[in-house]
Amino acid sequence: MQTSLGHLGYCTNIHAGESWEAHFAALQQAIPELKKRLSPDAPFGIGLRLSNEASEELEQPENLIQFQHWLADTNCYVFTMNGFPFGGFHDMVVKDHVHTPDWTTEARVEYTKRLFRILSVLLPVDELGNAIQGGVSTSPLSYRYWFEWEQPAARDYILSQTTQNVLEVVSEMVRLHRQTDRLMHLDLEPEPDGVIETADEFIAWFTDYLLPMGIEQLTEEFGMSDTEAETVICEHVRLCYDVCHFAVGYERPADVLDKMKEYGLRIGKIQISAALKAQFPTSSEADREAVRQAFAQFNEPTYLHQVVARTTSDELLRFRDLPDALVAFNENHAEWRSHFHVPIFVNDYGVLQSTQDDIREVLRLQAERRFTNQLEVETYTWGVLPDDLKKDIVDSIDREMKWVIENE
Image (cartoon, rainbow, N blue to C red):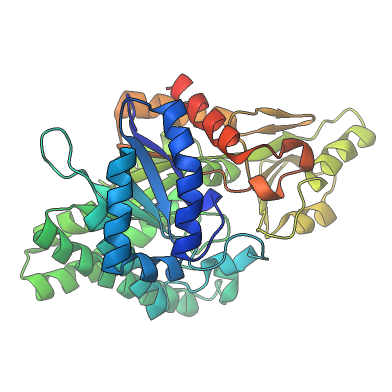
């Protein structure tokens, strides 16, 4: 839905169902009630998540037409898509396989191109008759621990190979823009332990790999000048600002935006999400252990819950998953932040807190700078939260969306 900060929706990765039939059934069950509560008199925005299987099925003309009719009948629209999880995302162990297949593979390329073809059909026009822009968020190229990441030659090979595959999708977006007048962008989502993990790594990849390789490809393929090719790349490849992920890495929102602006790079969308955090008290070992045990209550086997610890000397230590941090905990740990998407409307979890303040700051900066027009609530962990936090899914989405609207 249109708000003072841009198009706002929630990501449908919250709903189970890997086939299109199952996922569509979940949308039909949840969205009409949410629209009635949140946007009864205006179009309701959706951040659509499709598995590879569902994308193949939805691209079939009969399914796509049926979905378009349903969107029109319910006064809803799709303005962004989540192309990060390729396969199963619920009721199974996901962990690092959320990156499978990664951007070294043709399967990832074909899946993402298919999402853009679908999005080019679904994107609506605004009140002036102009097609709104739309984005597809995607993985940060791969998972760094699958490779000998500390070896420069191995790192260069992976970055070169993944970039070449990203550029295949850029070419597809250029063709779709010319054919349909839909300007779309691929939004890379840095996350803990991804090949791209921080704003600095995104900028380095963009300037050292994507631009030089992309300018060479686009000038040859489309006859563009170097300047035109650079402009096209910056239009079509952007950063997905997942607030949880950047908060886990202790990156200040204003710093990230300032760096992006300095290099002329753009934010595709904000994913509104919160992580867990806590400072360890210095009062007693018992109090410190109580905080550690509180984190342990969120140790579940489905998703990766990386931890970044800040030490008493302000060093950042990175742990691949919460169990690793629980074992490594010692007197030098001053603060933990854990990649666990918790409800954004809750700030206090006993002795733990959420990174809700980072969301507030990002929304404030969005109001001030308008660095994107797409905002997507993305809490997908309802099924694996501790029992006292599990609530009705429609009520939970409703509370999250209303919290964002109230904090614009």
